[in-house]
Image (cartoon, rainbow, N blue to C red; front, side, top):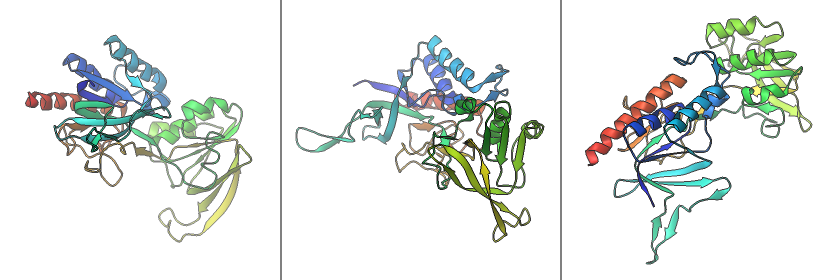
Length: 335
């Protein structure tokens, strides 16, 4: 089995930046990822990535992939990493599965009958850039109707609802972007915000509120989703107290009939693949230094999976570069 200088886990901005610099530093490395593009590919309009104005998430992800291809890098897609563990010799053992098939067990039995770790990949350093996945509401009907009118990706599924009535749930930038997009597709868009005001960029708020077919319902908590094989609507409770009196305030339950529901209430870090010894914060984000180091020497992390306070594509790319350069310093000390 090949022993690489570096394995990059993930397939978006941070991974792309790290790989570009890995080529320039002549490292032996591989990118492995479940998919390519990550949350970037699910973004709508992207106007804040330097040098690439007037683009969208899918197009930007395609540019990342082309840049890698121009450098002779072909990510290994369809690989879901299950565990990263550091071995006694200081290298990292990575176990993974592809599709529905597990490519390896966590252990193998050696000839003397003792168990020993079995690895799909071995590397001197690892950079984790696995990003995040959408947070769920955890209300009745949500799981049953997922992909049956319930979606967490407006860019992916929004075009399936032309002329329909839909609801967008959330109060941040992703919900605002979803509402703006759906206003140009659906006949009616309800935005369900559990807070008394939006918590996003003012330019997006203004854009959404200027859409004539958008209705915002504030102080509204979604309590269930219903349908008969496909979404038919949702139930929500209005907090009728003052904006600051959420606990114990009187509520009013209402029904809203819609054809589709787009949930944008935040993200959860994809950090379960790292061992228990890796430090995480209360949100499950991997804690890193200013140089993208974890508390495990040789293991680095970059992008939205880390505790970096601002989740932006350009920041993820910068962190990917930083992680790679620090990994080079680490490798140089091994030689």
